Image (cartoon, rainbow, N blue to C red; front, side, top):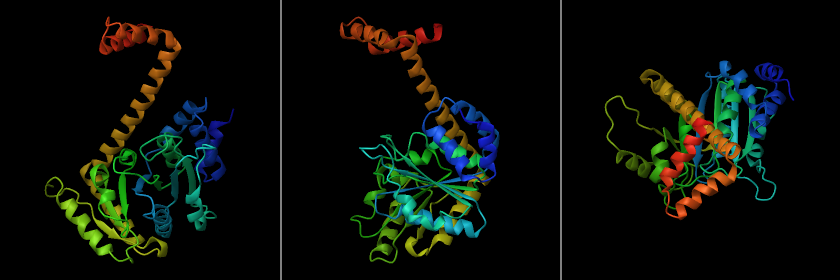
Length: 318
């Protein structure tokens, strides 16, 4: 059992080992998880959470590193949560993001953590919301959340970030293919990375056209900007930070930031509640209760909705 108050105090002082231990408690669903969350609650709410997503190969890790450099120039303390696919053998993360961000490892104002998805879909790890909370409480001004390489429907980052950045790159087939469907709708800022390649201007034009085909915007509504970058050389990083800060200012002015954070907290609470209900079903009734209801459904005595009502009734009366 760890001394949670001492760990939180050390994390606030910027000690990376304390931050690492707190996130490990979160990832491992430690029995002390509730104590950790209770200790962190009064300390959160100050960090600006930026999510970066896009198809594999567009340069998310390199762009994240460039953003870290740009924010550090502004004196911001930066936390990076890099979500990698789980190894099918060890269950861990590849840690490839740390290789690309090695220049920041010795910077005390930067904390980088890789997390494995552990089979969780949507581009994030299941413990990502709690890990973000740890970095927030540890005093990070900006938290950059980099998802795994995602497809068209993996848009979970939109529910976890204040601002969502969608990255594309020219020369990867149809430039808009990676951003259509669900992922096109989540972007607050769009980035055409590797803009020194042929086709970058065409990709930006196509993306701008696609955004113009979206739902009509009223005067004063946010229109996602398109920023061209060459992240490997740090080009465009300052312009991207400016776009992010403009979006943050717009959200604060229109009350959108508070709405998003409230929705994020509601989703997190709902997820925890559903998990607890599943655990309680197993604790109170075990498989036999559920199997008995399922047998009655198969026999035509109950429909699934009536069976679910009976199961919930058993939980509320217990």
